[in-house]
Length: 251
Image 1 (cartoon, rainbow, N blue to C red):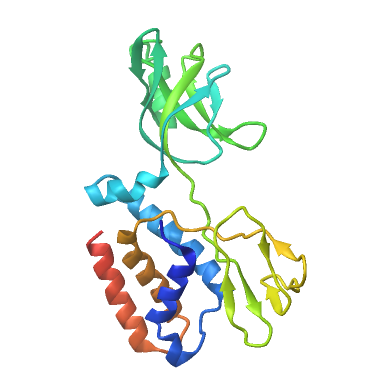
Image 2: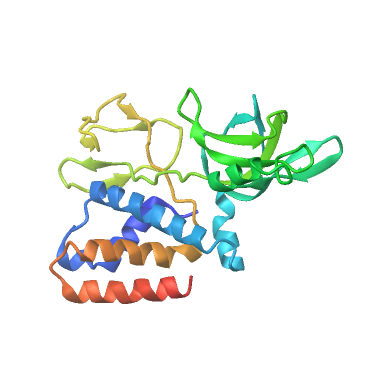
């Protein structure tokens, strides 16, 4: 796990904030890290299990053997579903049967041919459509099947850095990711403008990144590259682009 506060500090060190001032405010960082986090995730998925490093990186996001109940062959995917991995399956007594995941075009072609139509022995499914709550569904053929199990990658937790600032020195204090109420003492102001004082508490919104240390160089180079595009520093932009290319080449 990478602590969001640490990543922010690494970014400030990388762009030499001691020389150029605080050119990336925490609120701006929160916007950038959300984009970069998703970019890294999609990049890792694009190279899904190409090597052990990729397997380890995505290990945080895998959910195995999730049971979905079906009504008329239709079931609701988990709320944190992002992408299917492997083949779905059904249990037919003591036998596990793999379920082909097909496209809409393939579904139509199979259904129109009595030789390839679905059966309890050779079922298949499609992803798509939404239920009455707006959640994505899985559609299984034949519709007599009542349960299906899937393995999938879950959606990302959006990283966020929550903090308060000392009123007289403007020194920032970062909050940890915790469910315990955090106090905002007198002389401090919370991120949203709440003035500190006796009995003033907040719920920390900090969320850390679910990546290993080995993913830090790629995350950092992507962050620096985005920051460099906003700064009048051509050398920083060129350097960050080169470093990002190296990180992605080794990915």
